[in-house]
Image (cartoon, rainbow, N blue to C red; front, top):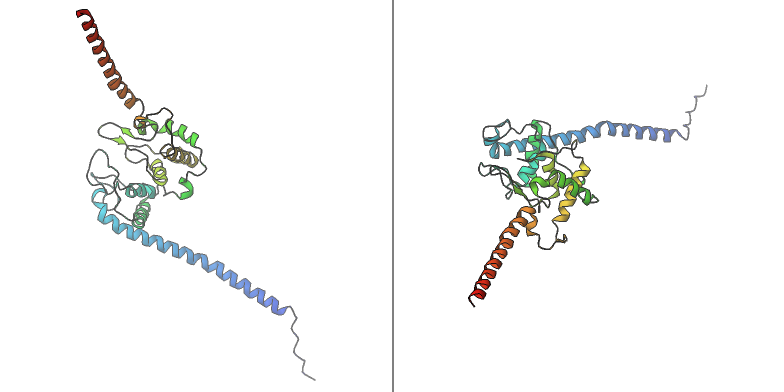
Length: 269
């Protein structure tokens, strides 16, 4: 018998093989690539935490304890979150120069990268407010009028209606808010630093925080106008009342003396 000739391949066989190879390749990529990306992210985060731990041991552990548990010189940092670290260290309030009723703002001593590493380490100690993204604190498109209403209701009692700050009790004070970055304003509302109450999203939604930031940006800008003329620092009734007493009463006393002198002269003549 003659040998059977080799079967001829179907014209679509090569296409089927190619599609099968592509499917296998795609499956392998889907199976392994995300894991590699996750591993890279995890590795980068672990490195940031490790570097942050070193920075913490040098600059923070003396007051806050070796594990962030707190001491008599500094509160616990467990659960304060990365947002609190970014605010306190980013505004130069921490590390503190000396103890006192309130830690003032000063020039920061850590770079942005180091602040992120410190924040990563503190965040690893316990869940807390997370450093906001630009889309969260950007005032673009926010309602300035609504922000003014919210600010006067929740903040003006301490910070003054224009954000100029004010005195509190026992040597404490509410700092002026002009010149503060939108990011730090948002973080302050998130975390409630020092004497300030906190306004988490459950109490004050993200949109409302943006409205307040937009209001402060508007009233403290160069384009802001004072319809009443001399604003006396924008400090409200205290400074305006003091101005009235000093200059108003002073003018009345001078006028009274002048009238009395004129009257005495008239009687003598």
